[in-house]
Length: 282
Image (cartoon, rainbow, N blue to C red; front, side, top):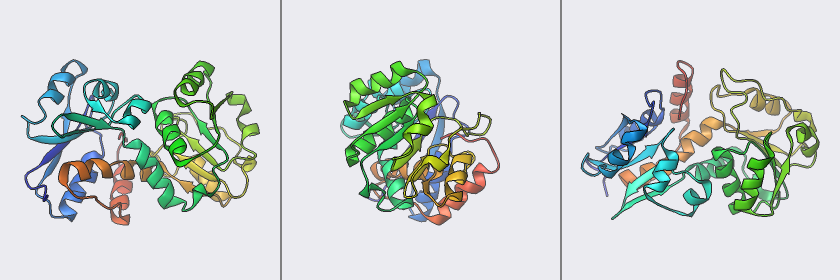
């Protein structure tokens, strides 16, 4: 399949700062595919009608960003990962409107690329936060075989909800217990907005982590967050949020345009330059 004449879009409200068109149109040009990827600003009350008319609008599928991810799940035929995460971010037409959550594979593929063989120690991971991004990370880590996931969150009830979904591998911890749980941790993942531009800093004692630990941060604005900088200063391997943003885009492009694209240094540099010039949204 050449993908000739195909189109896809990102649907959100607002959507003007989405980086998805930059990523997908780069790939369309690189592979010589006659397609187009656009932004579509859609109000919540118009979302159901819009995705019900994707084919009529000439779209093979779409990415979905805030505030539509939960509605996308409810209005489509989701796969297991989208159901478990509770949100869909990638839609495609295949006899029906189907959906997935590509944050799961985006997180894992970025870890694999940034910290090869990180999964040789699957004994314990620490996840900061208990929102939608944390659900995608937890699903991914369980799928890879992590034995114990300590979820650190200020609201204990949200961690209990995760335990109800994902089972006994989930161990809750309070925020004031964070430094104590890091001592024997192979992987720490920040899924909160702490450390993002305009948000408070993430207060964590990186020195508590063992020398072989890996640190991942889903924040990508700034690209080199204080957490990533502190981990690198200690010589720890890291996986940043920009890498995840790029890797999560791969699945949708393959579904819509018929070719699995590569995350290249050139593409990363393009996004880094763009993120340096404007506020960031996925």
